[in-house]
Image (cartoon, rainbow, N blue to C red):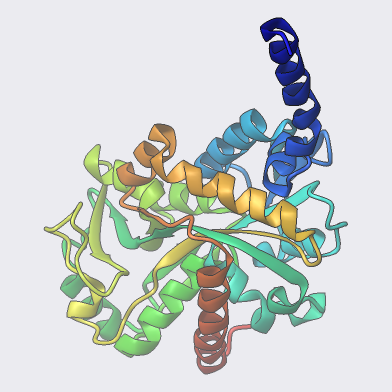
Length: 329
């Protein structure tokens, strides 16, 4: 065989091999577009909350990488239960995802009328981040320390008020646990979303709030607010001067966390792609900057840790809700 004929045969063999290579599962999956042209990431809380920025970053990055448009859709109600239920009832075709706080672990106990169980009815995708919360007052508050709050609450039971983004929200239960462990009688005042609740602190309507550091840490750095304690078991590296509430209320810990779920039954290849794309965000500068600025810890470690966290915290908050006799609106 002449050299020219040999080279022609080799080129032809290489071209014929391309379809077979693309048929390999990993390569084929990488070439496929997301099965829908537009997908929603439902946040089951009012717009303007601390979930919005990281969810929007995720939506933007997934849109760039998966060949579909991902949009954020705020659907508040029932402490996150209505939006979460909507995702659970959606088709498992990749068109609907859920981005939610640790309120997902409160829903099974507090929102029983929805007949919806996140453990049974949702598929875990990944924890997104662990988010500390802080006990916050405005900068000119008469309370300059956690000890001052404890003393005032014990001297005047029921007089101190704390705001939340709604009954059953993560900041509501953080306050309920604080009151229970410290032996306090605090008055809970729910608002329609955390943004309204934070505003109530600055207008003087409310005394205290347990706010996500993703939202309130910047307020403290700007001098608008004062942080009296944090909800993690130990002090935060970002705010070493602020005590952990557990230093004066032993056993207290109420970290918030954000996570993503899909409807139960989503095809494993779609779940695997989604998990892989989220894992890539651990090195994304936009995501890293947003979370580190709010003292949040990046996770994006897949379904297993999220499933374990959910199961553990459902039990924890069921006990808190029962002891405090909390009822949904």
